[in-house]
Image (cartoon, rainbow, N blue to C red; front, top):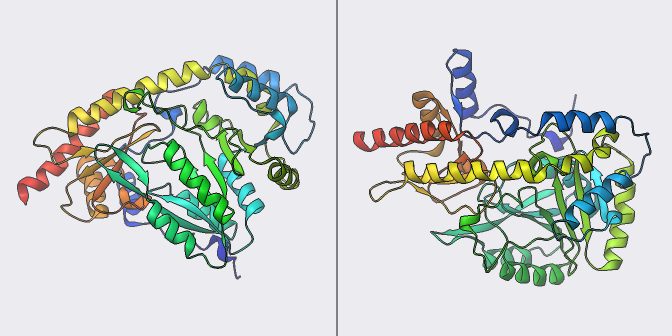
Amino acid sequence: MIFSERASFAGGLNALAIARKNLAASGRNYFDLSMSNPTQVGLTFPQDVLAEALKEGARHGYAPDPHGLEVSRRAIAAHFAGKGVALSPERLFLCASTSEAYSYLFKLLCDPGDAVLVPQPGYPLFDNLAKLECVQAVGYELDYEHPLGWSIDFERLCARLAGDQEGKIKAIVLINPNNPTGSYLDETELEELVALCKEYSLAIIADQVFFDFSIDSSIDPSAPPVNLYGFDQVLTFVLDGFSKRLCLPQVKLGWIYVSGPQEEVDASSRRLEIIADAFLSAGTPIMASAGALLACENEIQTATKARMERVLQIYKQELEGPLSPHRVLRCEGGWTALVQSPAFDDEEVLAIGLLEEKGLYAHPGFFFDMRGGVFFALSLIIEPEDAHRAARRYFEFFDSYCRNA
């Protein structure tokens, strides 16, 4: 059988994955420092509210609509209105997840062989999502300056666009805040991006699933994060959903919000209606329960952000110091902290050593296309007690390298 090239990335396990599999097979326990599942670290949505909302939602009759149930879209718009963000229910498209939302937008914007710009460092899922749609994921670089943080390298971004002689690049993906860097877009960057989008006819795809998980102490009050909901200077698609916003990865509801010049919004919406109507993947009980679930957003986000701030503080206390070889990179939001550590060896070798010697599983920087040193991505949503223990073992592992060097 000859299979499609779009799934050709389905290869074997990498060395770190093999080491983890072997460790588990031997019966040894390890701690997952890459944890991103809130349901496994005590950040659970109120179960009585969830059960009652789904029970009520199950009573709702089936009324297929490519935008999703109108009552759900109105509930989402009303919820955001309470946060000072004006949304039109008619510009919302509900789907099962943000991954599916990306697939809709790649279908909308790209022909086979076209490309989208994705951030580097960035989450590795984009390469797979793009390839499944026969689209290329072309990286644009984020630069880091300590302690100021991350910024888009516009010189290289402009060169990349200028080199696209055939006009294959159709959109730029913005993760706001980025995963794993935790960096938000700022007004100056947005101005430069708008100019490029207009010059090269690019759409913006803004993934804002972590937007409300800012770590307040790291944000300049005079320059709050840029929110792209309703942005109208260029064609813009904001992605969001319950998986992160409500710590409900098991409740599959995401959405796309379309904004921009009216003519382009209308043309996009007509086409998105055809794409979404071919799938109709969002379940009626989930959609119908949207209003009741969103009512608990403040409760779950407050608890999650308090956890994040505490864990980030622990990482800094345990890993940084006048004589420490580690530094925690600036993190403005999101569920991950990046730690730069001594380059005693290759990142993958160090990651396997951490796992086998200290029972710590952590994602190395190369998973996210990070360059220029040794980096590890550490979860900010794990229990603080676990963060203490893991950070100490992490420090001990590198300390032993230093002593033996």
